[in-house]
Structure formats: structure tokens, C-alpha cells
Length: 353
Image 1 (cartoon, rainbow, N blue to C red):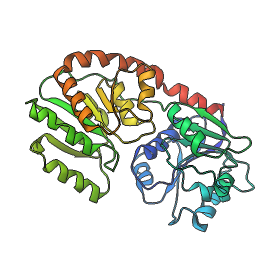
Image 2: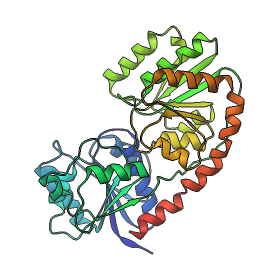
Image 3: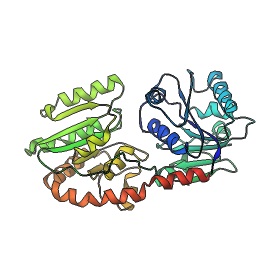
Image 4: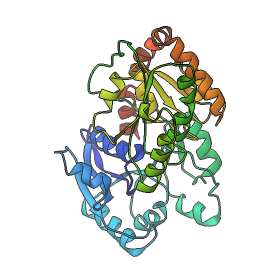
């Protein structure tokens, strides 16, 4: 069934999970509707799309402020140009402009929530700009609870939960273990993402003469990347910490590692973490946000008290000294992930609304 023209809007300039998810969503929806991905000009999403042929149309917009005429009228022009009826919005701050862009237009507005928000937005202005939202879609139960707490609902607004799906390019397989223990972190290098705690936790392996390599995949703002590199260089095991930069082949790194060490201060539902589960890595995280939910779903993974580096290091040591047994235990995650993160479930859901 062909749906009305649909726009995926993500105006973020960054190169993180939300931005990648917006591109994936455009691919998923395009077989069912004329699809348009609207992104910020000359930034990550637009530059990524320029590298490939796509089944959807890219439209870019240039703006300086998240609330201003260039954004308001630019989006409105594109909506009218393509007779857009459905909008799936990835983001938050630009919604102030989108409210005015959509005034008087018949838009089915869906906001997809993939990150945890900290401050309630229930003042009169936010009640206004959220009043025309048809659906809030949270990618896990943790985020659904966060949306209920943070976001005002309009009279007809509905809240739905749908897990992000995984579309893996190749069949996952675990690395056949041989020393050294290979430890992986994948994510944008930014405060709260956990690269600093991962580096610090590895001291326990050095002190117990366990051979290891910590592989950090991702990039970020230059100043903070340099800060993390300085932290790594200050360790006696500096030669064990490898910075790979941003990678277009994360699957290669997942195949080549044993442990996924992801001490994030707060996530929505981390793409990197669920991919690591799907590839059979032994996963470690802090006991916060969506990670306990994954254990309830049946995934075998390790959680330690929030921001407790000592516990993180202790768990890393336990796993590293029992690595073969641990890898056997997590093998079931490969099969379970295919069921929980089945792309057909996510696509059917979005097509239905």
C-alpha cells in the first residue's frame, strides 16, 4: 500500500546515532511512500547522502537559528512543494520552528524519541508547539517514561513504543578467541559517552598482567578528542589504547573484538550496544536508562552501578579472566536480537500510523 508523501526531518549538524537513524528511516520508508529526507545543508547527513544513490530525495536547508524565518519558511516551502502529509521528526530544538512551518497545513506529525531528555518542557510555549503532534514514538520503554515526564501532550497525541531495528549487512559471528583480549567502544567521542571511564577501567587488566587492547571507534569535537587522547597517553598502558577514528565498517570491528565496554552516563537505546549484542560480544554498561530493559528482554549482558568505575573495572577483570565461558553465554544474544530488533516489525508500525 502506497502512503502519502512522507518527510524525514533531521536538522542536526552532528554525526551521531540519531543522524544515522534518520538516514536509515528514509531507506526503510521509501518502498511505501514518496520519501524526502530534509537535512541541514553542508553537514553530516547531507554529506553522507551525497556519497550514494538513494531511493529517496534529499532536500537541504540552510539556517543559523533553531527559531527563525529561514528555517520556518524554508521547511514550509518544502512541505508545500512536495505535498508532504506525513512528517517523522528526529530532534527537539527545531520543533519551535516546525510548529510555525506547519500552521494551517494538514500534517500527520510523528516525533521519534531516541535520547533521554532531562528538563520538563510543560510551560505554555512548549504546550503550544507540541499541541499538534499526532504521535510520540519512543524507541524503548525507558524513553517512553521519559517522554511522559518531560513532554506535554496535545488532545489527540498518542505515545507508542517501537524498538529500533537492526539491518545487518552480513551474518554476525563471534571472534574465535586468542590473546590479547580485544575490547571495543563505539560511539561519538563526547562527554558522557564513556571513553574516559573505559580507559580508566583498564588499569585493572594492566595490574593483573592480562594482555588486552582497547579499541575506540568514533570521532568528535577536536578539543574533547584531544582531551581523551591525553588521558590515554597518561596511562602506563598507553600503547594498548587504539584510536580508530570514525568507521564506515563497524561490523569489521564487531567481528574482531570480544568485549564491548560501554560505560555511558546516559543513553536512549544505543545502536552501538544492540549491535554489539547482535554480534555476540560480551557487553558491559552502567545500570542506567535502557540497559536494564535489555536484560529484562532476555539478553545476557553485565551492568554495574551507575558511574562506579571501581565496579566497572572489577567486572571487566572477571569477564577477561573467564572470557571463553562468557563468550559461550552471550551466543544466545545473536539469535534473540533477530527477534527483538526485526526490521519488519518497525517498518509495519510506521506504515500503520
